[in-house]
Image (cartoon, rainbow, N blue to C red; front, top):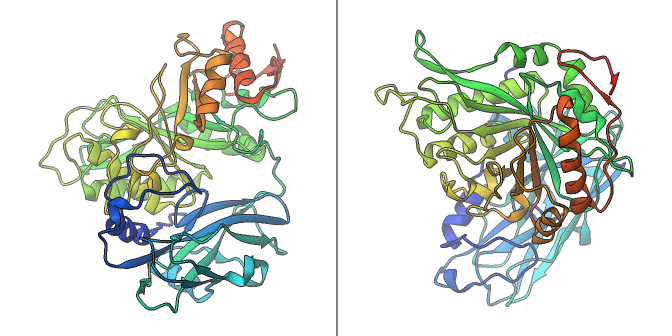
Amino acid sequence: MINNIKHSFLPLAMFAMTIFTSCEDDIVVGSRIDESPYLTSTQLNGLLLDENTNKNSSVVELRDNEHSTNVVFRLSKLPQKGVDVQIAVDESYVATYNAVHETDFKAFPAANVKIANNGTFVLAPDDKNTPSVKVTLTAFEGMKEDETYIIPLTATSTTEGVTLTESSKHMVLLVQDYRNKPNTNKGKDAVQMVLYFEINDTNPLNALEFLTESGKYYFDHIVLFAANINWDPEKKRVYLSNNENVQFLLDNNDKYLQPLRKVGMKVIISILGNHDEAGVAQLSDMGAKEFARELAAYCRAYNLDGVAFDDEYSSSPDLSNPWLASQSAYAGSRLMYECKLAMPEKIVSLYNLGAMYSNSLQIIDGVDPGQYCDYAVADYGGSASPGTGMTLKQCGGMSIELRRGSGNSSESTARSKKEAGYGYYMFFALDPSLYRSQVSRCQSVCRGLYDEELVYPSHYYSKNSTERKAL
């Protein structure tokens, strides 16, 4: 079940190193970009990206027989002349991708992919971007829910002076079949609700009891708090450790975790320190790569949707060991980057703490945090800030600790965070024994984010039980 994926970010790295001298401002798709910082570049470089994510790899959830997404071709500066571009499916790249990255993704049939205008475009002399290029996918017979299919797109140009390397001209869409899963989407661009479960105390199945009046599930991402990064003193290496509560859920995955995924929720495992010298922000480059491979195998083996890092509860590392390094934002960034390389189809997220904050994540191997950090949430009572290449859509607007009562859960704050453009909200420690104080806080946030009521739950699940009991 171990399948190490080495996904290349080289196109973005090359493009970023060529044109970007500052990425402190949010990237807003479709907005004019100030070209002055990179007008000194003499090379005219091109790059093909997913328009919505600004990434050269994007996961597509196919919920209907037909699905459309947008890509865009970008130049590093104004071309000063017309530039022709051809975007097409390159079926031969599937074998190349799988061979280089040691993956076994199956090809999505090229005949089921339609590119607007047959993929042919001309950029004007004063335009660096193509318009949105609509790519339409049609489901094919025999698709499997737990399979990931690859659509390799490629851009070419016959215009003299346009540089498109073998790597920078490619991008991939990773397609997953969600047609038979309930669509819990609460609206276009709706804020995603993240729930951290303290699973030593609470059954994650309780997330199923929270529904809005329109019948949508309130929680989108369920984070299991937590598995641990640990140090093995005999083998002198880092490894992933589960306490008995985590292991119980994994051993009974089909009963406690997959029911959440079957209704459309993402199930993510939190990774944090465990009072020894291993830590998520204190691994060497080698240590980060090896631990990322282990996490990727773990997520695939248990059919989880990704990882959430939390830098706390770690002791000082032994710097003479090649697995370890000094605690730093760089080391934490390296681990997140390596995880995205190892499992591009999974979520890599962050809880801001210790040496790892979204706005201090670093560019790794030329790749900015916006490419390897899917989203970040703040510590209780705060809002996450976008790092280099990130947008507010990748940040949590508020983090609320339900058991302690910390964090602002007012309707007005939720509405203002939504209007500001934040993409996530976070709750921690939902507990059926405390619903009298907790549910009202969830309800006020629901009104602010979604303009509808949250139905008070009528049932609950006790720890380590699948019996649905009346409150």
